[in-house]
Image 1 (tube, rainbow, N blue to C red):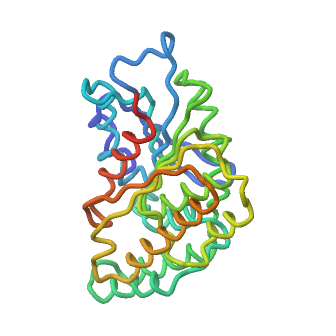
Image 2 (tube, one colour):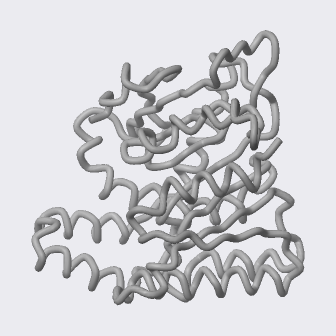
Length: 284
């Protein structure tokens, strides 16, 4: 799975890279049509959960040629897992995309157990996902993106020195909020799709309180889905309720943030959320 999109997506290259912490990652680099870094450098948009998202988001790089709504040029860097670990991406993302110290919500545990009961995941898969949540390292993964991977992308692909973006969905959206609150000066824009703020005691609320009025200057665009709100799964209802609470606290603090409601489920909302981020934060 780690190389399944190699050769299938136009203008896309793939390599694997080990972090300082000893974890291996798969990296897909999608350049704009007719991209020439010697003529005009483009910033990077990092997209998380690459094993799942690259096939749905990387082709949208053609929006840079859309005559009705042009998107600013960008190089997309999708980050996932390599080799045999690619098959375990749903488990490993819990380790990498969740902030350290994030409490495990009972509603998430209930959803995982329901998955075992309905046969959508095995007992081993369920235990693995919950085990990763007991020792999360979103801080290390953020350092990997900004301090290990980015210098290589900048060197090898001649990208611009500023204007970079980040997009994540679900737990990737939670990571995007964490990155916005932690390294808001590295990214110029951040998209958080249906961020996995499942627990009302999430670390993003703690960090928001600690920042007070000193909010990041990076653009933040948050989306969630109507079927999450209207469906009967408590884990998604909590996600949207806590996301709304996060947005209200930003507004009360004078934060500059945009948001949008997608007409999708949690599973189907990824591509619409990414397009919403591009249209809102990277329109030309």
